[in-house]
Amino acid sequence: MDVLLVLIALPIVLPTVLCLAALIAAQGHSPFYRQERVGRGGLTFTMWKLRSMVPNADKRLKDHLESDEKAKQEWDTFQKLECDPRITPLGRMLRKSSLDELPQLWNVLVGDMSLVGPRPMMPEQKPLYPGHAYFLLRPGVTGLWQISDRNASTFAQRAEFDAAYDRELSFVTDVKVLVATVGVVFRCTGK
Image 1 (cartoon, rainbow, N blue to C red):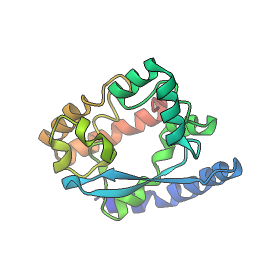
Image 2: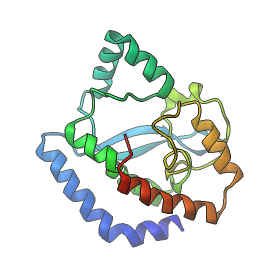
Image 3: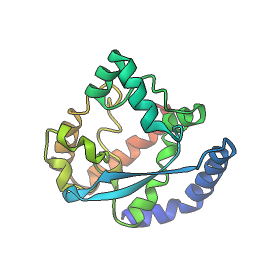
Image 4: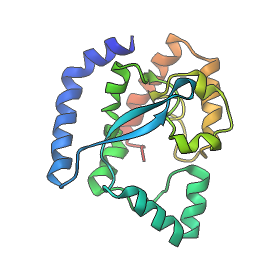
């Protein structure tokens, strides 16, 4: 079902991704960003996104967290920052609209991800994750956490969303999440 839905969306998604990639490239940045993420069973895979951050984002984050104790506490709790110095102005728009996630449909096509599932975590976040449901499931482009109060929840609370999804796993649940995702995208509540 995942592959069929991605193929149906391809005539709209591909031109959109190419246009956005051209806008990013016009700012002098490589338009695509790849990062290792943890998949089902704890195996790592390369996840693709449209670039929303400056090229030296890891160093900028490290320097920012070393110089701002409040930001470090926020990062340690949420694994994200309200005012993230790494995000470009175009990147902020891409994140709010969740358009930066569109290249992950490639990950769905190759089987690393599903349309619906837990948010893919980075390998260094594994020790921070208090649950086990994540490792039983294929990470998703969207999921219960993404359509909920994601911006107010801690990183550890993601395990609760993942456990709930594992308990409610069904075609109907996936359809509900996909429909709710459309609302989230149009409300631009991403970060």
